[in-house]
Image (cartoon, rainbow, N blue to C red):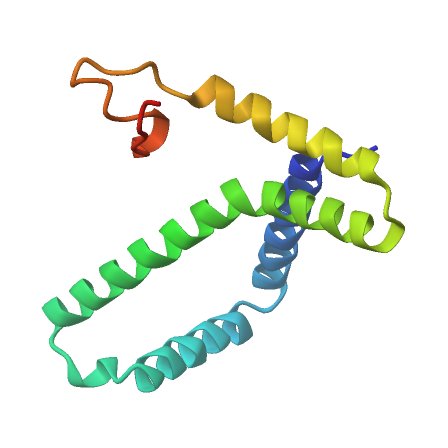
Length: 134
């Protein structure tokens, strides 16, 4: 079975090699295409009205937000999709084994990540949740 990381790497390498191949075959066409995409980007977001400093600030913020979104999606989306697929299989099949295994895994993960009670009167349990003692 192919690992998802290896598959993603292969797809990215294939896309990069096809772009490089197209650049070697038709450099003027590719350059015009990039210029047209840059023009569409500037017209869509009205960047042609801004000064170079304002453009830099806007592009920096946009790059930061997009990179944070991509990092978050690559870190948390696979596990979330796994949980959703297990829930869907439980809803369709009614098999409790898949749900109990995932619940045990989540329980072990929470127990492993819980912090020890702190020195401030044991007021906080792991991950900032407050609790009351009986």
